[in-house]
Length: 189
Image (tube, rainbow, N blue to C red):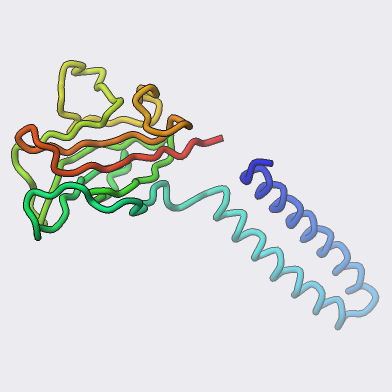
């Protein structure tokens, strides 16, 4: 069974238990006020916790996460800090992923590559290629900086996993690969 379906089922069961708790609490309150108030207080606490987790499940706050999965493979020179890629979401939030990171992004979220940095300074003469993405407005470009895209815009044949959800992003300086980041799209069901 899919984990999201199971979570929704549990939330619905808990909401049903809360409604039944209110009904039983009011029934007990009409018979014995003190026990009824204690029961209703417990049901209110249970309903609040159920509501909170329902909110967290149905309205997630983060639509992306950065997970370090592999060790960096490239650097401009030994001893230098890693190269970082700067992305922006369609709502204006900025993300930073360093060399070797797996960046998990919801499939319906549109992102734009803003550039690359190292030591808090922008790198010049850098080309960033999202392998599997071609901008519709400029299909001949080899630099994907400045174009919004989402999972829908990706060519699935370039995915590096069986589920067709992970894509490589190569950061090159003077045609030499200096870093790579991986985008993992989380499919909405």
